[in-house]
Image 1: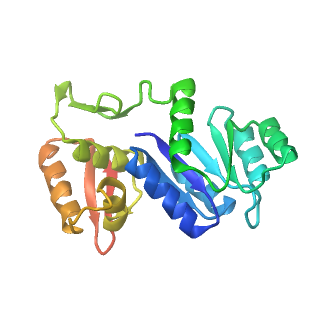
Image 2: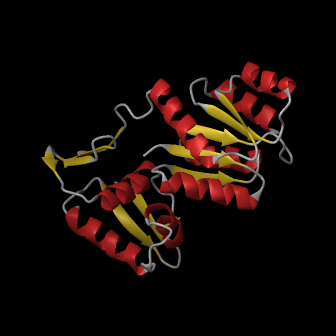
Length: 223
């Protein structure tokens, strides 16, 4: 699953974009300013960044310049109300990959993301290895010590999320919002059911453990 960081100080727009991306098969995390984005990027990796320009504390130009100095490959899309050619030129000179003017057509955004993914070959060979466990995101396959472990799509995505961010605690609500449809009538207990299924399927695995953080949610601990 392609992970996208959305940096936008308008809370409602941020939430709308993230939810739309998730409904279209992406994993999206929203931040309200560049400072929060730096902290989020420190603890997790992303495939694409979508950023506003006019933000408090640090504007999108400075944010993009800093990101590009640290990572020359990650695609960056500006999503902004600034429609002047000078701003567009500045953005492209900093190394952004695309520029969308608000109000943004979310269908167009998804199309542009698809084009960027194809150009950058982001999906190719995305895999995760923890000891004897190997997960291939593109193939949705999981093997433990060479033996295939059958997982549903939701089981795979939940486990991949936890193992991609070891020791990071995810609340039940966070997992519910990311991996269940917005129209779903399932309650938070559905998350507990899936975690129990994953523990049963990997009870013989000595490479990691899914730990319940009481009162919060779950995290993966590597052994």
